[in-house]
Image (cartoon, rainbow, N blue to C red; front, side, top):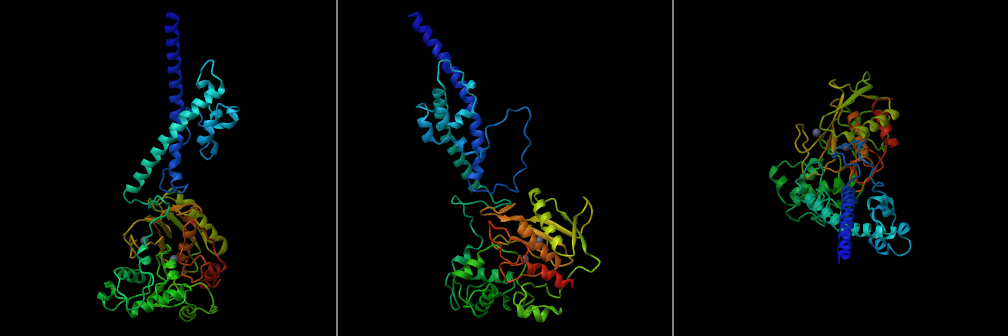
Length: 431
Ligand SMILES: [Zn+2]
Ligand SMILES: [Zn+2]
């Protein structure tokens, strides 16, 4: 009897050791997998709003292989087979953990791996629960700098109202039409002499004419009807600088030629200038820029690269100003009304704006998801900077989608300078 009691006590002691060791192991896995939850939800891998990664603590032991290593996840069907014939090969995640931490005498490695994988199986449930709670938190969080994804990974577009106007044409009266009027007025297509007309929901002659002009600018058949192609263009995020300034449509080649007053402009050129052709004087070919404190650190390199690209292709040179020094150009990151003549409005979906020479201001709209490079659902900081620097130097919008000065910029894409962009600067500055 005493011998039996001694055996029971020994088994209890061994069980306690196992549980203690497994807890130490499992706590580590929860941290690693939780860190992966954000990327699993579809966020850009380089979130400008996230704090920079902390340097590794030299006093802490190294972690498991990086989360990108798929073997770390140890699929459950593999774990079930652990303990059969080839546990170490079948369950490599278990093999990466030092088995001495388990410290079970008389247990084979397959049994050790099986125990660990069982724990990970339950942990995956816990991790899934943590991910679910994290998702709920994200969805319920108030709107901050960046808009969040829906569970499907698709961002709710600020232009959703346009989708509800599919097929609308002159004579219709639908409650979203006043929003369409506001959209077209913001980008220069519409200006009602009577303010009441601007806020009603009547699809009138003036609106039809504005829709046709928009369609011409974006190479859509000018039907005056809100068709699929028009909706597709209008729901794409874009630059906040108007396409039509003071009633002159600079996206149309015929207007560029007559209004520019510059010699040597080809009537099929794909660049345009601001009214009056504002530009930097000949003595100002070296321009300095600085970042406002509200600009996320992750945006600095993309903007610097964009300046470098313009420098490589034009007679301009750019340099970042010393701290606390004035500069020719200023780059900031704002939401909503931020003190200039063109506030970012929640539903207008603009990405950024910049002003003609020699204003020098270039502002990102912080109410967008930004990335350094092409990431699904986010906008590339450098691509947008290339476009806005074009405005800073005096370029207007182009109607050609291949040109960096095309107003629309889709998510998940990158774009480079085009020969027409460079030719536009050379023409404007007679170089
Ligand atoms: Zn623009
Ligand atoms: Zn601004």
